[in-house]
Image 1 (tube, helix red, strand yellow):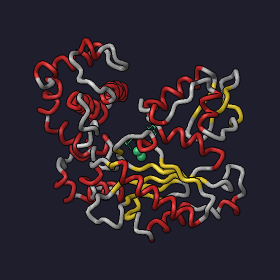
Image 2 (cartoon, rainbow, N blue to C red):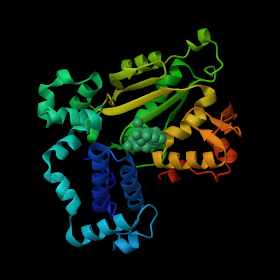
Image 3 (cartoon, rainbow, N blue to C red):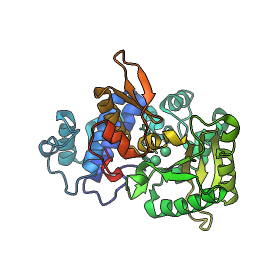
Length: 334
Ligand code: DCP
Ligand code: MG
Ligand code: MN
């Protein structure tokens, strides 16, 4: 089960129960606020090198308040959490959590399925007519998609990707973002960003056609790296890949986004994350009267309307304009 993703983390059991609570809040209670709070606490514990001794001690850490500290104490003293035990007594809760782990099935769909009596992966296999193409692939690759991707494997995939794409056109820029760029030893999926200097928000349509995500995807299919397509639009590919030289390797989730050159570094910043880090930067931007998204950084007028995009030629530009000290990707894990 995908959890803290760091087996030698001295607090991995604490991280696991916090992430289980987070899952429950997202999938069953639909409380995004609590979901984020549990995730932040787990992320904090995930970065420690020492075992937490008590809730009191944990409370001094960022993102851990009285309530979570109490739960940590209960877990340290009893080895379990009554709240979690109670949640698990309801088999529908367990079923919703399970189905929501299938790629493409969200909490609402999971509940819908459980309401009509579909509660296991076996049930799902028998009712594939109720699933979208994405959800069918999620079910097919359920076990593989739960496995974390070791850094070394992403590095291999990166090499193949970059070589293939640059062969199409040497001016393509390719960055693998997500947790990989933040230096994590393991990732849940592979997030690729691609741009080309001739592909900007100002480029005329005829010229844009020379740069094509479809061509990139077809090329990677030919190289037998991409094995399935979940969806393919003009700027976003969602799919599945596997290192072809080793058929024992799991299938992996791969996302590729084609972005305009002038949006590239805002996109790199956004897709590098973490999502909690992004939230903090966006909140800081608003305080500085700017609005930041995956496309652009814009100054807000007195009326609060976004103005023209700032010229961004690297990630550092964003930090500079927002008066933030530059943070290396490896320091953006929360
Ligand atoms: N992102 C975000 N807010 C979201 C979802 C994503 O800001 N709600 C951004 C930050 C993420 C990046 O997109 O780091 C990639 O999303 P992933 O879900 O792939 O997350 P990670 O790559 O960080 O982690 P994982 O190893 O689980 O893939
Ligand atoms: Mg990712
Ligand atoms: Mn992703």
